[in-house]
Amino acid sequence: GAINQVSTDSQVRRIVWITVTGNLFFSGRAILETVFAALLLGYWHHYGTVDKVFSHGWWDAYTLLKYGSELAILALMLYILQSRFSNTAAAAAAANGGASAAPSQKNGAGYQRVGEAKTATVV
Image 1 (cartoon, rainbow, N blue to C red):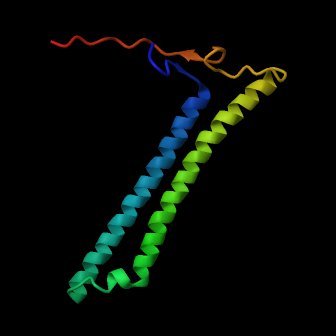
Image 2 (image 1 turned 180 degrees about the vertical axis):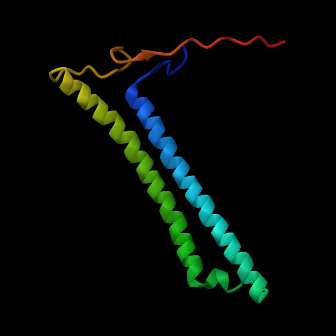
Image 3 (image 1 turned 45 degrees about the vertical axis):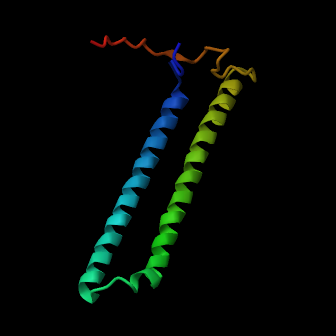
């Protein structure tokens, strides 16, 4: 059988959260890169060189924002991955009077079956 043939609510929520935060992060980064490129082009047009830009405080702010945002998205993704797994298992255990009934490889309760994939014929 294929890996991950079954889906749970927590997996769907986790995927949605990762998708939304990833899209926000990369959209923000694209805006930051576009603004920086426009400012760099404007500076070059005005002064004829970009030498001072890379030794200026704006470059320091740009790199700090760029790498700081990468660390922030990494921490957020790790938080999403950790919190969704542990909270779901704890909630399932609490709902069943402390018995561990969280969906797993051995316990199929709570899983929703995913349809079989059709095979394609290559001509």
